[in-house]
Amino acid sequence: MEVLLDPNIAYLVLVAATFFVLIALAVPGTGLPEVLAMFSMFMAGYAVYQLSFNWWALVLLLVSLVPFFFAVRGPRRELWLALSILGLIAGSLFFFPADKRLIAVSPALAAGTSAIYGIVLWVLARKVVQSAQTRPAQDLSALMGQFGEAKTAIRQDGSAQVAGELWSARSQELIPVGSPIKVVGREGFILVVEKGRSPES
View 1 (spheres, one colour):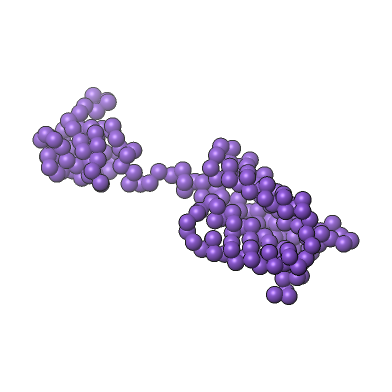
View 2 (view 1 turned 180 degrees about the horizontal axis):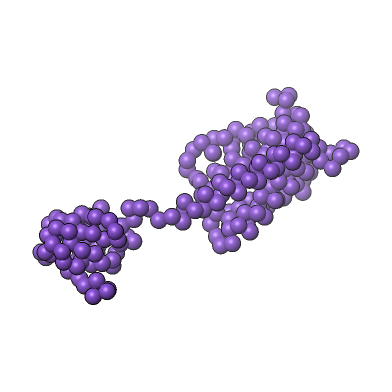
Protein backbone atom coordinates (compact mmCIF):
# COMPACT_ATOMS: atom_id res chain seq x y z
CA MET A 1 0.00 0.00 0.00
CA GLU A 2 3.01 2.29 0.33
CA VAL A 3 3.03 2.76 -3.44
CA LEU A 4 -0.25 4.68 -3.08
CA LEU A 5 1.59 7.40 -1.16
CA ASP A 6 3.31 8.49 -4.37
CA PRO A 7 1.22 11.50 -5.56
CA ASN A 8 1.41 10.28 -9.16
CA ILE A 9 0.00 6.85 -8.27
CA ALA A 10 -2.55 8.39 -5.91
CA TYR A 11 -3.64 10.72 -8.71
CA LEU A 12 -4.14 7.83 -11.14
CA VAL A 13 -6.15 5.89 -8.56
CA LEU A 14 -8.30 8.97 -7.87
CA VAL A 15 -8.96 9.44 -11.60
CA ALA A 16 -9.89 5.76 -11.91
CA ALA A 17 -12.24 6.05 -8.93
CA THR A 18 -14.08 9.06 -10.39
CA PHE A 19 -14.27 7.36 -13.78
CA PHE A 20 -15.83 4.14 -12.45
CA VAL A 21 -18.23 6.10 -10.23
CA LEU A 22 -19.47 8.01 -13.28
CA ILE A 23 -19.85 4.84 -15.35
CA ALA A 24 -21.78 3.23 -12.48
CA LEU A 25 -24.08 6.28 -12.37
CA ALA A 26 -24.58 6.25 -16.14
CA VAL A 27 -25.22 2.50 -16.41
CA PRO A 28 -26.57 1.39 -13.01
CA GLY A 29 -27.10 -2.22 -12.10
CA THR A 30 -24.49 -3.81 -14.35
CA GLY A 31 -22.27 -4.78 -11.39
CA LEU A 32 -18.72 -4.49 -12.74
CA PRO A 33 -18.44 -0.65 -12.69
CA GLU A 34 -19.80 -0.61 -9.12
CA VAL A 35 -17.23 -3.18 -7.96
CA LEU A 36 -14.37 -1.34 -9.67
CA ALA A 37 -15.61 1.97 -8.26
CA MET A 38 -15.67 0.58 -4.69
CA PHE A 39 -12.21 -0.96 -5.06
CA SER A 40 -10.61 2.16 -6.54
CA MET A 41 -12.40 4.41 -4.02
CA PHE A 42 -11.00 2.30 -1.19
CA MET A 43 -7.46 2.71 -2.53
CA ALA A 44 -7.99 6.42 -3.20
CA GLY A 45 -9.39 6.82 0.31
CA TYR A 46 -6.25 5.27 1.78
CA ALA A 47 -4.05 7.65 -0.21
CA VAL A 48 -6.18 10.65 0.79
CA TYR A 49 -6.03 9.60 4.44
CA GLN A 50 -2.23 9.37 4.35
CA LEU A 51 -1.60 12.42 2.19
CA SER A 52 -2.97 15.91 2.61
CA PHE A 53 -5.49 17.21 0.08
CA ASN A 54 -7.21 20.43 -0.97
CA TRP A 55 -10.76 20.71 0.32
CA TRP A 56 -11.82 22.94 -2.54
CA ALA A 57 -10.68 20.30 -5.04
CA LEU A 58 -12.76 17.67 -3.23
CA VAL A 59 -15.78 19.99 -3.40
CA LEU A 60 -15.13 20.56 -7.11
CA LEU A 61 -15.06 16.80 -7.73
CA LEU A 62 -18.37 16.32 -5.92
CA VAL A 63 -20.02 19.29 -7.63
CA SER A 64 -18.88 17.98 -11.03
CA LEU A 65 -21.12 14.94 -10.54
CA VAL A 66 -24.19 17.18 -10.85
CA PRO A 67 -23.66 18.28 -14.49
CA PHE A 68 -22.78 14.67 -15.36
CA PHE A 69 -26.19 13.58 -14.07
CA PHE A 70 -27.82 16.19 -16.32
CA ALA A 71 -25.58 15.10 -19.22
CA VAL A 72 -26.99 11.56 -19.25
CA ARG A 73 -30.59 12.43 -18.35
CA GLY A 74 -31.45 15.96 -19.42
CA PRO A 75 -31.29 18.48 -22.28
CA ARG A 76 -28.11 20.25 -23.49
CA ARG A 77 -26.18 17.06 -22.86
CA GLU A 78 -22.94 18.10 -24.56
CA LEU A 79 -22.68 21.30 -22.49
CA TRP A 80 -23.32 19.51 -19.19
CA LEU A 81 -20.91 16.73 -20.12
CA ALA A 82 -18.14 19.19 -21.03
CA LEU A 83 -18.61 21.07 -17.73
CA SER A 84 -18.53 17.83 -15.76
CA ILE A 85 -15.37 16.56 -17.49
CA LEU A 86 -13.55 19.89 -17.02
CA GLY A 87 -14.51 20.00 -13.34
CA LEU A 88 -13.41 16.43 -12.75
CA ILE A 89 -10.08 16.98 -14.51
CA ALA A 90 -9.38 20.18 -12.55
CA GLY A 91 -10.45 18.63 -9.25
CA SER A 92 -8.20 15.61 -9.83
CA LEU A 93 -5.20 17.69 -10.91
CA PHE A 94 -5.29 19.97 -7.87
CA PHE A 95 -6.56 17.41 -5.36
CA PHE A 96 -3.15 16.82 -3.78
CA PRO A 97 -1.41 20.05 -2.73
CA ALA A 98 1.95 20.88 -4.32
CA ASP A 99 4.95 22.30 -2.46
CA LYS A 100 6.74 24.24 -5.17
CA ARG A 101 4.92 23.42 -8.41
CA LEU A 102 1.41 24.27 -9.55
CA ILE A 103 0.32 20.64 -9.25
CA ALA A 104 1.72 17.76 -7.20
CA VAL A 105 1.78 15.27 -10.07
CA SER A 106 4.03 15.06 -13.10
CA PRO A 107 2.84 17.55 -15.76
CA ALA A 108 3.32 14.98 -18.54
CA LEU A 109 1.32 12.38 -16.61
CA ALA A 110 -1.37 14.93 -15.83
CA ALA A 111 -1.66 16.04 -19.46
CA GLY A 112 -1.80 12.51 -20.87
CA THR A 113 -4.21 11.22 -18.23
CA SER A 114 -6.49 14.24 -18.56
CA ALA A 115 -6.65 13.88 -22.35
CA ILE A 116 -7.41 10.15 -22.24
CA TYR A 117 -9.87 10.59 -19.36
CA GLY A 118 -11.75 13.37 -21.12
CA ILE A 119 -11.95 11.63 -24.50
CA VAL A 120 -12.98 8.22 -23.13
CA LEU A 121 -15.57 9.71 -20.78
CA TRP A 122 -16.98 11.91 -23.56
CA VAL A 123 -17.34 8.96 -25.97
CA LEU A 124 -18.78 6.55 -23.38
CA ALA A 125 -21.28 9.05 -21.99
CA ARG A 126 -22.54 9.93 -25.48
CA LYS A 127 -22.91 6.22 -26.32
CA VAL A 128 -24.92 5.67 -23.13
CA VAL A 129 -27.22 8.58 -24.00
CA GLN A 130 -27.68 7.34 -27.57
CA SER A 131 -28.52 3.81 -26.45
CA ALA A 132 -30.99 5.14 -23.89
CA GLN A 133 -32.75 7.20 -26.57
CA THR A 134 -32.96 4.33 -29.07
CA ARG A 135 -36.31 2.56 -29.02
CA PRO A 136 -36.05 -1.22 -28.78
CA ALA A 137 -36.49 -3.01 -32.11
CA GLN A 138 -39.33 -5.07 -30.61
CA ASP A 139 -41.19 -2.18 -28.94
CA LEU A 140 -44.74 -3.25 -29.78
CA SER A 141 -46.27 -0.20 -28.07
CA ALA A 142 -44.84 1.91 -30.91
CA LEU A 143 -47.05 -0.04 -33.34
CA MET A 144 -50.32 0.95 -31.67
CA GLY A 145 -52.55 2.73 -34.21
CA GLN A 146 -50.32 1.77 -37.12
CA PHE A 147 -51.86 0.54 -40.37
CA GLY A 148 -50.71 -2.47 -42.34
CA GLU A 149 -51.83 -5.37 -44.51
CA ALA A 150 -52.98 -8.90 -43.72
CA LYS A 151 -50.50 -11.29 -45.31
CA THR A 152 -52.65 -14.31 -44.41
CA ALA A 153 -56.25 -14.63 -43.32
CA ILE A 154 -56.37 -13.44 -39.71
CA ARG A 155 -58.70 -14.66 -36.97
CA GLN A 156 -57.27 -16.61 -34.06
CA ASP A 157 -53.90 -16.40 -35.71
CA GLY A 158 -52.35 -15.05 -38.85
CA SER A 159 -49.67 -12.69 -40.15
CA ALA A 160 -49.70 -8.97 -40.86
CA GLN A 161 -47.20 -6.61 -42.43
CA VAL A 162 -46.84 -3.52 -40.18
CA ALA A 163 -44.10 -0.87 -40.24
CA GLY A 164 -42.12 -2.87 -42.78
CA GLU A 165 -42.03 -6.05 -40.65
CA LEU A 166 -44.04 -9.26 -40.57
CA TRP A 167 -45.88 -9.83 -37.26
CA SER A 168 -48.05 -12.55 -35.80
CA ALA A 169 -51.58 -11.20 -35.45
CA ARG A 170 -55.07 -12.12 -34.28
CA SER A 171 -58.45 -10.48 -34.65
CA GLN A 172 -62.00 -10.63 -33.23
CA GLU A 173 -63.35 -11.04 -36.77
CA LEU A 174 -62.11 -12.79 -39.87
CA ILE A 175 -59.85 -10.55 -41.93
CA PRO A 176 -59.19 -11.84 -45.47
CA VAL A 177 -55.67 -11.95 -46.88
CA GLY A 178 -54.63 -8.67 -48.50
CA SER A 179 -57.04 -6.58 -46.42
CA PRO A 180 -55.85 -3.34 -44.80
CA ILE A 181 -55.60 -3.66 -41.02
CA LYS A 182 -55.09 -1.39 -38.03
CA VAL A 183 -53.23 -2.34 -34.84
CA VAL A 184 -55.52 -1.85 -31.82
CA GLY A 185 -53.68 -3.80 -29.13
CA ARG A 186 -51.14 -6.46 -28.34
CA GLU A 187 -50.87 -9.68 -26.40
CA GLY A 188 -47.22 -10.34 -25.70
CA PHE A 189 -45.56 -10.35 -29.12
CA ILE A 190 -48.82 -10.86 -30.98
CA LEU A 191 -50.60 -7.86 -32.49
CA VAL A 192 -54.35 -7.48 -32.03
CA VAL A 193 -55.72 -6.00 -35.25
CA GLU A 194 -58.98 -5.03 -36.87
CA LYS A 195 -60.05 -4.21 -40.40
CA GLY A 196 -59.06 -0.66 -41.22
CA ARG A 197 -58.33 1.64 -44.07
CA SER A 198 -54.80 2.88 -44.47
CA PRO A 199 -54.41 6.68 -44.13
CA GLU A 200 -53.50 6.91 -47.85
CA SER A 201 -56.79 5.34 -49.03
